[in-house]
Image (cartoon, rainbow, N blue to C red; front, side):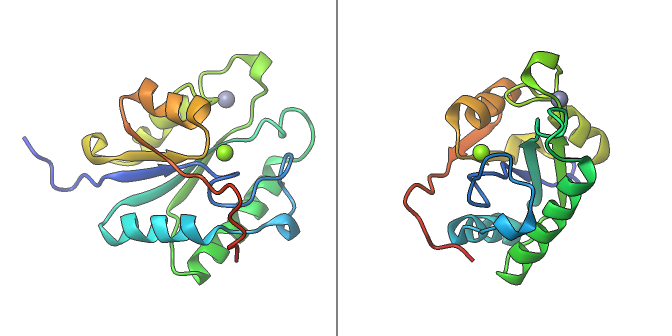
Length: 159
Ligand SMILES: [Mg+2]
Ligand SMILES: [Zn+2]
Protein backbone atom coordinates (compact mmCIF):
# COMPACT_ATOMS: atom_id res chain seq x y z
CA UNK A 1 0.00 0.00 0.00
CA UNK A 2 1.33 3.39 -0.99
CA UNK A 3 1.43 5.92 1.83
CA UNK A 4 1.09 9.29 0.16
CA UNK A 5 2.15 11.18 3.30
CA UNK A 6 5.64 9.74 2.92
CA UNK A 7 8.11 11.98 1.17
CA UNK A 8 11.30 10.94 -0.55
CA UNK A 9 14.54 12.45 0.78
CA UNK A 10 17.80 13.68 -0.60
CA UNK A 11 20.48 12.65 1.91
CA UNK A 12 23.38 14.90 1.08
CA UNK A 13 26.92 15.01 2.42
CA UNK A 14 28.28 18.36 3.61
CA UNK A 15 32.07 18.89 3.29
CA UNK A 16 33.36 18.59 -0.26
CA UNK A 17 29.80 18.24 -1.55
CA UNK A 18 27.85 21.37 -0.58
CA UNK A 19 30.78 23.44 0.69
CA UNK A 20 34.39 23.51 -0.33
CA UNK A 21 36.21 21.09 1.97
CA UNK A 22 38.86 22.26 4.40
CA UNK A 23 40.46 20.24 7.20
CA UNK A 24 37.86 19.99 9.98
CA UNK A 25 35.80 22.91 8.63
CA UNK A 26 34.01 24.72 11.41
CA UNK A 27 34.60 28.46 10.97
CA UNK A 28 31.84 30.18 8.93
CA UNK A 29 34.49 32.38 7.31
CA UNK A 30 35.80 29.24 5.54
CA UNK A 31 32.37 28.61 4.08
CA UNK A 32 32.27 28.49 0.28
CA UNK A 33 29.18 26.95 -1.29
CA UNK A 34 29.29 25.08 -4.60
CA UNK A 35 26.69 26.38 -7.04
CA UNK A 36 26.43 22.90 -8.54
CA UNK A 37 25.32 21.50 -5.17
CA UNK A 38 22.71 24.22 -4.75
CA UNK A 39 21.33 23.42 -8.21
CA UNK A 40 21.12 19.76 -7.31
CA UNK A 41 19.40 20.56 -3.99
CA UNK A 42 16.95 22.81 -5.82
CA UNK A 43 16.23 20.10 -8.40
CA UNK A 44 15.20 17.63 -5.69
CA UNK A 45 13.42 20.07 -3.39
CA UNK A 46 11.32 21.31 -6.32
CA UNK A 47 10.20 17.69 -6.75
CA UNK A 48 9.07 17.58 -3.10
CA UNK A 49 12.10 15.88 -1.56
CA UNK A 50 13.15 16.53 2.01
CA UNK A 51 16.75 17.76 1.98
CA UNK A 52 18.75 16.31 4.85
CA UNK A 53 22.47 16.85 5.36
CA UNK A 54 24.26 13.77 6.72
CA UNK A 55 27.80 14.48 7.83
CA UNK A 56 30.68 12.91 9.78
CA UNK A 57 32.12 15.47 12.20
CA UNK A 58 34.76 13.58 14.18
CA UNK A 59 36.42 16.94 14.91
CA UNK A 60 33.92 17.19 17.79
CA UNK A 61 35.20 14.15 19.67
CA UNK A 62 38.78 14.87 18.62
CA UNK A 63 38.32 18.09 20.59
CA UNK A 64 38.89 20.41 17.61
CA UNK A 65 35.50 22.12 17.88
CA UNK A 66 32.23 21.87 19.78
CA UNK A 67 28.75 20.75 18.74
CA UNK A 68 27.67 24.38 19.13
CA UNK A 69 30.28 25.45 16.60
CA UNK A 70 29.00 22.80 14.19
CA UNK A 71 25.51 24.21 14.62
CA UNK A 72 26.68 27.76 13.97
CA UNK A 73 28.47 26.57 10.82
CA UNK A 74 25.43 24.55 9.69
CA UNK A 75 23.05 27.46 10.25
CA UNK A 76 25.26 29.75 8.21
CA UNK A 77 25.53 27.10 5.48
CA UNK A 78 21.73 26.76 5.43
CA UNK A 79 21.30 30.52 5.17
CA UNK A 80 23.79 30.73 2.31
CA UNK A 81 22.26 27.81 0.40
CA UNK A 82 18.82 29.40 0.80
CA UNK A 83 20.07 32.78 -0.39
CA UNK A 84 21.26 30.96 -3.53
CA UNK A 85 17.83 29.42 -4.13
CA UNK A 86 18.15 26.03 -2.42
CA UNK A 87 16.83 24.80 0.90
CA UNK A 88 17.86 22.44 3.67
CA UNK A 89 15.35 20.80 6.00
CA UNK A 90 17.66 19.31 8.60
CA UNK A 91 21.19 18.31 9.57
CA UNK A 92 22.40 15.10 11.20
CA UNK A 93 25.99 14.63 12.25
CA UNK A 94 28.13 11.92 13.80
CA UNK A 95 30.51 13.39 16.40
CA UNK A 96 32.55 10.22 16.93
CA UNK A 97 36.14 9.36 16.07
CA UNK A 98 36.73 6.27 13.91
CA UNK A 99 38.27 4.41 16.89
CA UNK A 100 35.04 4.79 18.86
CA UNK A 101 33.40 2.32 16.48
CA UNK A 102 29.99 3.96 16.71
CA UNK A 103 27.16 2.86 14.48
CA UNK A 104 26.49 6.32 13.08
CA UNK A 105 29.77 7.25 11.38
CA UNK A 106 29.26 6.92 7.62
CA UNK A 107 29.48 4.48 5.88
CA UNK A 108 27.55 2.94 8.76
CA UNK A 109 23.84 3.66 8.74
CA UNK A 110 23.00 4.78 12.31
CA UNK A 111 22.30 8.35 11.21
CA UNK A 112 19.71 7.04 8.76
CA UNK A 113 17.93 5.18 11.59
CA UNK A 114 17.88 8.40 13.60
CA UNK A 115 16.46 10.30 10.63
CA UNK A 116 13.77 7.66 10.11
CA UNK A 117 12.69 7.94 13.74
CA UNK A 118 12.04 11.66 13.14
CA UNK A 119 10.69 11.71 9.57
CA UNK A 120 8.30 9.56 7.57
CA UNK A 121 10.41 8.94 4.48
CA UNK A 122 9.79 6.93 1.34
CA UNK A 123 13.18 5.23 1.05
CA UNK A 124 12.32 3.62 -2.28
CA UNK A 125 12.42 7.05 -3.94
CA UNK A 126 15.24 8.53 -1.82
CA UNK A 127 18.81 9.19 -2.89
CA UNK A 128 22.24 9.75 -1.35
CA UNK A 129 24.57 12.34 -2.87
CA UNK A 130 28.18 12.83 -1.83
CA UNK A 131 31.73 13.39 -3.04
CA UNK A 132 33.21 10.12 -1.72
CA UNK A 133 32.29 6.72 -3.06
CA UNK A 134 34.10 4.99 -0.18
CA UNK A 135 32.10 6.93 2.44
CA UNK A 136 28.87 8.27 0.95
CA UNK A 137 28.59 5.58 -1.71
CA UNK A 138 29.21 2.83 0.86
CA UNK A 139 26.66 4.45 3.17
CA UNK A 140 24.09 4.35 0.36
CA UNK A 141 24.88 0.73 -0.48
CA UNK A 142 24.72 -0.29 3.20
CA UNK A 143 21.30 1.34 3.41
CA UNK A 144 20.10 -0.05 0.07
CA UNK A 145 19.71 3.43 -1.38
CA UNK A 146 20.51 4.92 -4.76
CA UNK A 147 23.78 6.89 -4.86
CA UNK A 148 24.93 9.74 -7.03
CA UNK A 149 28.50 11.00 -6.78
CA UNK A 150 29.09 14.72 -7.14
CA UNK A 151 32.50 15.88 -8.23
CA UNK A 152 33.48 19.44 -7.48
CA UNK A 153 37.13 18.94 -8.47
CA UNK A 154 38.44 22.06 -10.08
CA UNK A 155 35.07 23.77 -9.70
CA UNK A 156 35.62 27.23 -8.32
CA UNK A 157 32.05 28.36 -8.91
CA UNK A 158 31.35 29.00 -5.28
CA UNK A 159 29.08 31.51 -3.63
MG1 LIG B 1 32.51 14.79 1.80
ZN1 LIG C 1 28.87 8.23 15.36
